[in-house]
Image (cartoon, rainbow, N blue to C red; front, side, top):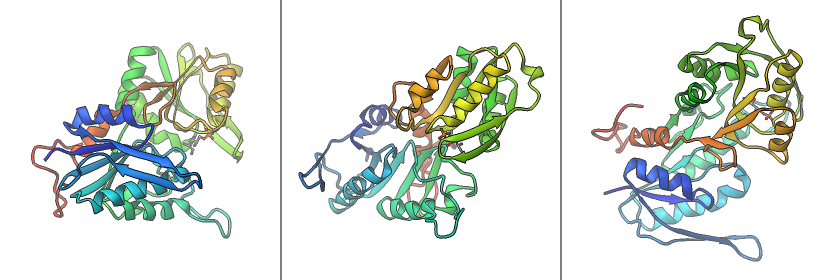
Length: 308
Ligand code: R5P
């Protein structure tokens, strides 16, 4: 039976494109807030015996989690065979350790909560730093789609004289891959974060990339302080205005406006969080990841599904 894709509100475009990619149908969901702020959820399609694929980008997870849990539970209650979650952006990945006594390690708690609601999870480039893989966090099957091939293709097409700049050591895992695929040089900065909104960066010798257009690549743009620090440093060193490419367009408060005002020539993101800067589509990569999920308890991928 074909899969049934259910978009969480705001995820309709990604869900339709994903459904085309995996040959699934799109179903409807009605959801609203009661006057007292509790949530009403109603499935507008028959899910009995179907594999349900809920699509929800998790920017703003505190507000999104309960409606998603209600939706997944209702689908299961109405006879869905399995209920999986495609979360193009997976939240709560950065508090992955107890940095100060008493702190909640929210990456673990959130994984337990999501894993209790869904049978599997597919996401794009989760922020993995101290956790080596999603399997360390999630007990349910997970698959990760990668943005690097699509980001590299975009750079090759739009900025052929680029050099890729990773704003911190953590970003090197993505930026080295992007640069290699795009066939351009690669530089990584050292970053010091003094607080949520205080970031400074220092650069190694940049003589080898002088004359090229800087493309700053990062997985998440949240306050944009990291990208702003990189853009300013490049300006001070006499480079052309930088192109900024983020995978996940979190953009807290006025971060996008502030990044543009800091001198970015262009700000481009992938479509994992709906935003006006989305220019790089990832539904094909996500579709591949969904196709490669185990279809039965043995953990084997479905016959004919390509490896990711
Ligand atoms: C950090 O480890 C991430 O890779 C990003 O560099 C970071 O999340 C960006 O945050 P912000 O936009 O708030 O500087």
